[in-house]
Length: 242
Picture 1 (spheres, rainbow, N blue to C red):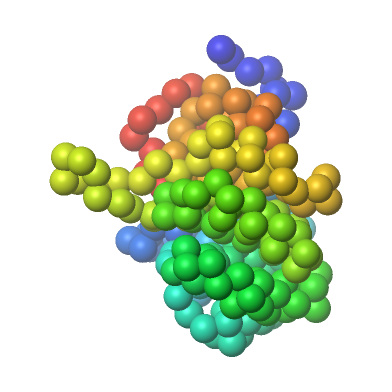
Picture 2 (tube, rainbow, N blue to C red; picture 1 turned 60 degrees about the vertical axis):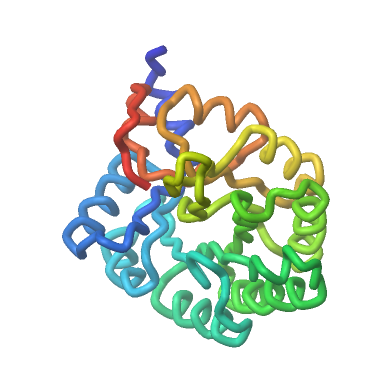
């Protein structure tokens, strides 16, 4: 399938171009930011220290500056997450993708999880920044827990709920470590249990245009991926790294 230019523009506006791999250098991040700007991506999602750099490169463009909070495992205290969010906003971020405390969610400590999310959402509201709550569905696999997270996130005022970090590695039956990332089933579930005021972001493992369209059709209003160029060009690829 070869998308038309309007289709390319439309899919690009759903993408948060991920520049989060720990080995990325400043030069590689800048290259990725420029690519996202050129393609018209909705945002870039950069490592926290690179927010200022990305904001300078994207000044005046339609591509927003995003970053991650408590990434990738969500284990920092709520106070540290709030401070990280505050610094990110001061540096120019207008979108914050925060990771929940995964262990607390797994044990059902919903009061803690709610306070943790609220701490970051409060900072986001102060700076008019969107907050996306990452469930890490490779670890939080129980449907009832994902539904509860949808409810808590919406009550807190989050703008989006999000599937994965792309770094939720689990030991596989063959002994290797890998992750699943976004699934259509999770997008359908999350969309069904959030109101229209909350967006759903599919992230992790989205590698080609056809998959991107499927996630969109299942209710995703943002897509987190590093395969932006491949997706926008409408060609499949298995070798883009998250």
